[in-house]
Image 1 (cartoon, helix red, strand yellow):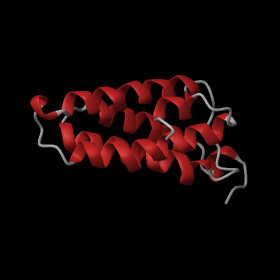
Image 2: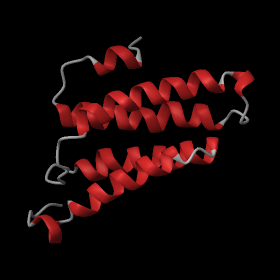
Image 3: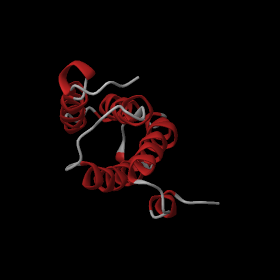
Length: 121
């Protein structure tokens, strides 16, 4: 079985790796996290630590790159990432996830075809 850690280190193009990690954060970790009551004594801290660790690696790889939608990366990557921030905020009440959401949403809005001049989907 492939672990999330080993998936991160596979040789994918950066865009594909970011899409895969964003989807995994949303599809695997967030539902597992949301199923817990908000309590540190039932494994919540471990799930949150895993999410935050993977998220920091994802952010390191994204920060300097402009977002574009030429290959559908907003729909297939950023949308899942935005969804995971909302889910993490709902599960924890921690506004740091809303800050992450707003930062990425601003980047997505700046990549619109009418702003970037690039025709996309």
